[in-house]
Length: 333
Ligand SMILES: Cc1ncc(COP(=O)(O)O)c(C=O)c1O
Image 1 (cartoon, rainbow, N blue to C red):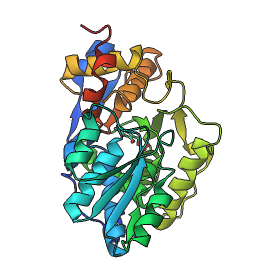
Image 2 (image 1 turned 90 degrees about the horizontal axis):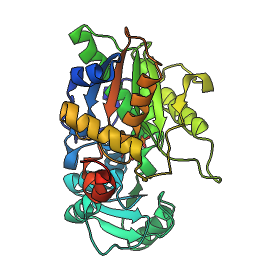
Image 3 (image 1 turned 60 degrees about the vertical axis):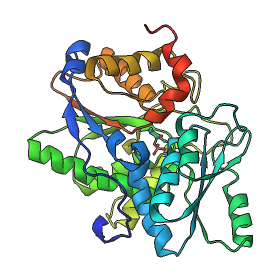
Image 4 (image 1 turned 180 degrees about the horizontal axis):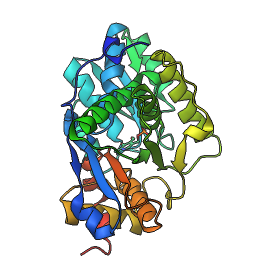
């Protein structure tokens, strides 16, 4: 087995993140015990799950002698904001392929991208980094050494961050004398999900790993379960875990994608406001708001027993709140 500690990693985050129980939320919902792992507090430019992936991606980029990071995502991508911060903190240039066109008003993550010095390339309909290879070619022609950070940071290298996170979590739980029956989180490009599956195996734990799907599948995209599986198997191979994951290992709840990616509905509004008002915790409108809405529904549907303990991974995204003010406040007073 290869120890995670032996792989190239550039420390970027404030780790370990806090692990706390949400007693008021559990009482309000009349549900199982609920815990939260505060990966919104990973520290890099307002934090989030990408910090952990970027530690391994930057380790790899620097080992390869890269001088520039290139990635892509939606205009309000948390991943792009964190990649811009990781580049700045490591002395690299950063190029972002963002979906849409330049807006009149710059706020949320986009404002932070600019403050962090990233070069933004507007890519219209293409919001999943489709133009990354083109940008790389141009950079190479100009004599730079670009490193591709894949969409969402979800490669086998990036997903190692969540195997690392699993070790951190299970060590905290052992110290507290607690055991989780389930962990629930937002699953979008699959790296977090894959890393957690590999991490559970690495730590020899039983906890159920339940992803709440955020995006509706596009017709031309590979099957998402297959994507998660191949990433999880690639992480397992890299760590020499001697494990092969099968579709039965992937628990993915796909019924909470609402009106599509980034469309805030009643369920997301309720979840964001419930966590804010009962726990003083801010979720984001696109990922953790939707994932928490899924968890709230699963609790209401009695999918958990009172003896269960459910961990929610807060994967960040807070800066996007400011870009969704109108949608979040609709009907909430
Ligand atoms: C705040 C937040 N949570 C969760 C996710 C989903 O993580 P993954 O892409 O690893 O599935 C993202 C992805 O961008 C995110 O920004």
